[in-house]
Image (tube, rainbow over all chains, first blue to last red; front, side, top):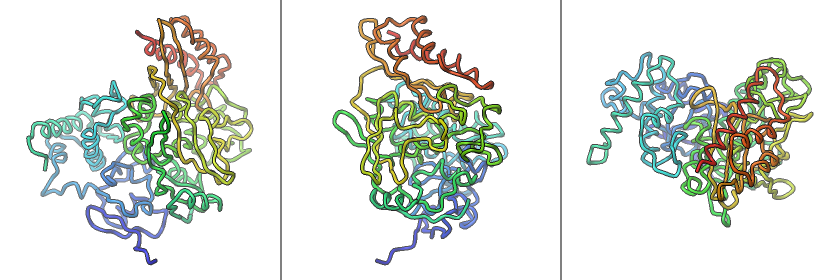
Length: 178
Length: 323
């Protein structure tokens, strides 16, 4: 049986996966597809700068082989928003000065995008008093849930302020967020 | 990374066939890919087991069967786990980051390798990385190293959190291999280093973890306490997992396991015997710590772990026995 070449969808477009199994998802996105919004920080899963969404889940793209993503739907910062059409989280990062050098920001925003979905799904965290209960998006919860993304400029308090604003807006909106 | 060939297994049998030919299994890859980048692991063949269908959580009698490919994130968020085995959710959530937990798997996490700095530095002596090369940690920077279960050859810890909870919960590791299926109690899964630190666990060549089985819930009070250098996203210096039931002011039953204290997830029945049937008190907790740490031995920079473990144990027991 003829099989289709291994393909992943990146920001909605089908892309043939690399032949070299050593290619990490991070290097494939940046070097082969030119999607340089995703950043290489430590390259060892310790900083979160390379965070992307795979089937809606946040992962470290530096610790994943591109060849293992056949059929997956991958979303990078370029798919989340563009300068002329910023996502609410991106606007909130600007409003609250949630960055200084900006290098960790794409990873922070991809991570925060997934965090919102995890909160909606009711996932607990290490600081939840009762893991069986539905979590509340307290500041302590948000800090714990963003702990996989380091910011060496130390913009943490403003990053959390940006998240709090987006969560507050989503809760007060009657309709589903766009 | 050294060049390697990559195959994709569509079933456990296909995975076993590849393992039988010498391939190394890759699941989430969060540890293995890092080790391959550093050329600590240099497999010639990898077989991806991501799509072998072993990614389900299902009831197993009164217990639960967690497939080897269930991600740490899915396991910790599972309503059954959160309700009946909250210790397991707590321990998983205390480890790594959300990004890593989304990729890391139940089977892979059991097999994660030590975080000893000398194991990671290929210019240094390490009996775990290269048998017979020596141990640079004994007289080196050994702040994170073990004080129990060490040998002349190796003092590295098993670094994970999930396995510590599974040990306290009497979990069983289910495997398939060239000699048929095996059921390995968690307490017998990891290996103390002895004179062969290269093998972290008792898996045989060609053997594959298919699931982890949890026995019926105990209904006890379950707490995972992790002490570390920063509030999140750091390995434990010492961790304590407890599952304890009080009856009429006395400890009726109690399971205790410790992480990052020994070379393997550590459980000592003698400690539990000290506690069972007794009224909780600071003196009782101190006696339990004495039994636990009687044979503990530090190597300089990690001496602090001995009093730290005693205090962490007392604090955890105080919390678990509080009326």
